[in-house]
Length: 239
Image (cartoon, rainbow, N blue to C red):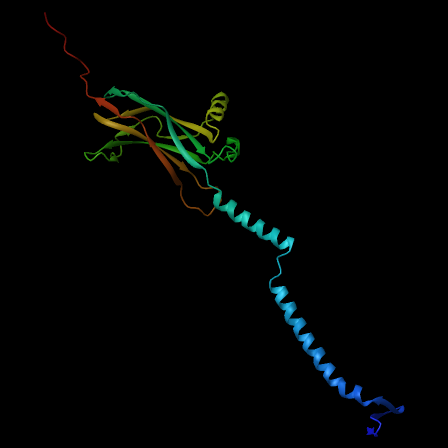
């Protein structure tokens, strides 16, 4: 590169010398530095803008959907099992007289909208067992020894409730679904005293599943039954 007194600079390349203004040559580095600084400022401005950028509609929708799904999972409540004695035994019976009782199984849902049709519930695995309990001195109900209660059957499978009763319950209690009832007849309490008949609802495992044994769901007790020891051959009065 050759420079003469007229502030011209001659650059040599493969096509021969060419002349450029020296002032432009000296100013070129300064312009390059200014452009680099401007580029740096633009990059920083872009980073700040992207960091504070609001989420897109698709991202907001996804977040709202996830939040709603979690809220629905938390608000969903499983139905509650219920047992009601619909056939109470006699309150006072002589020793040796048979008694009977019936109970109804149902599911109660948190809202009427969440209640389902009773036909969609598998009731084939439901079983009820009748047993005898008595109150201790502290008021606690405790089971009596085996053999105190006998009868034709102490186990029963579920029976369908008549359609008219199902419809009546649906109108009066829309959050409740009746599943069926169990009945125990010909029960004999073999000792005098005050007792209650306890009905325990049991769910059998699914056939072929890995679950071992049945699951006890809940139990309900009847009203007290007073069994009185009465003479079988009362003496006749003499005149």
